Length: 118
Image (tube, rainbow, N blue to C red):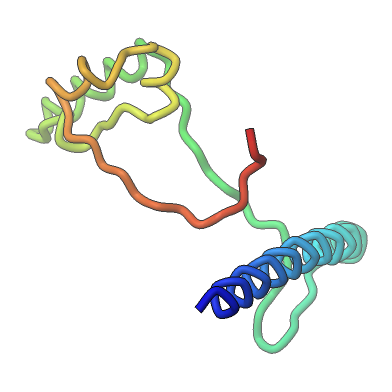
């Protein structure tokens, strides 16, 4: 039984190292392709176009957010049903989970990735 566990651990380590290698190679390939596309324009491969596409994000000032919430309410939309407080904003506030649990439901999801040992 110990041999099976050791083999599985060795295989897992082998897989993890290969993932690190492939991710590093992928980054290099994408960086090279980005430079080519930047210089020569979009590249179409197998019906898919590699190009730079806009990524849109809206940043509200506190006053703008207040006015937006008021406009939603005037339109009959409950602003609190569509507006949310980000995890980043909550971390900046430094409010503990004991306090937050009185106002919100905690949702935990698992992400699969490698993280440096502490």
